[in-house]
Length: 255
Image 1 (cartoon, helix red, strand yellow):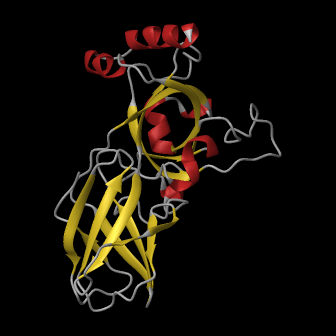
Image 2: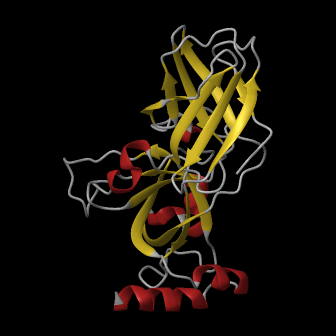
């Protein structure tokens, strides 16, 4: 703990005044970061959270795939992390005075054929961020390949309302919930059709996809979303009664 505290103190010297105020609080943890997806981040689209085009879904290129220790079976999808390169360990590779806030959009699978300290970067129990290349190059040099970092959970700032994409078929609605602000991580989702008297709780199918086994065709749909912090909001009649599978709808509200 003394070494981590010293690292943070030294790190703050290289940050701007604004960043010092941001990073001076508690909650910073140690991890490592690599990158994937190419210089244009095209290889980061899709992934284990179920998001499609990350630009359309509100996340852009400031994203990362999380190791098993952080991904939490998909419950971490949509969460945000502030990351800085630990210049106290690799000053030759870090871009001093920089930090980035990324969104968890994918899973970095373990590679048990390689040791955790030499290629198996995402093996349990290591916390690790496999960042998009543009995000990585915001805090470190491309040639580094892998760098030690400090990270902490932060709130997510989103533009526009929450996005609901409805896939599936009759009696099976698979709803992707994206562009979620505040904590970003979703803990529960409910759906209510205009002909339903009660809210129906949905179950997490995978990543940020939530499912219902009810027949909801021909009804306008409302959704209630609860975050990992317990905060929730309700998007009434976000999908009109003539909605079709494959369509996306954006609420007028945001956390």
